[in-house]
Image (cartoon, rainbow, N blue to C red; front, side, top):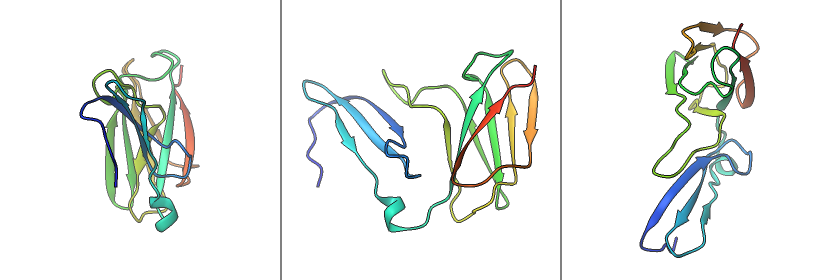
Length: 135
């Protein structure tokens, strides 16, 4: 059971305890923040990949990039806008839940500068990978 104030002003979603599942921190009106820790990773095997973008020609966090992860015959797409709601910014890197798939086939980045980059090796699941924009 979660007891909550009447009004939440903002929230961020990220892997606070670095166990592979996403947790939530809310900023509540006239109250202290609430931290909601997910226990999904302790209850079942989960698969994920975190992508940390490093821009060189584009901005340093790759804000404005579109990232596509191909894994298990599926395509997962995220736009790296750096936000999660009103007055909130979720922590980077980008998080992709992979369902039952334990292998990532490829990651494609469309950088804000217009460049396109595809990586198809060295992509283990349940890891954070850093992708640096080519100059």
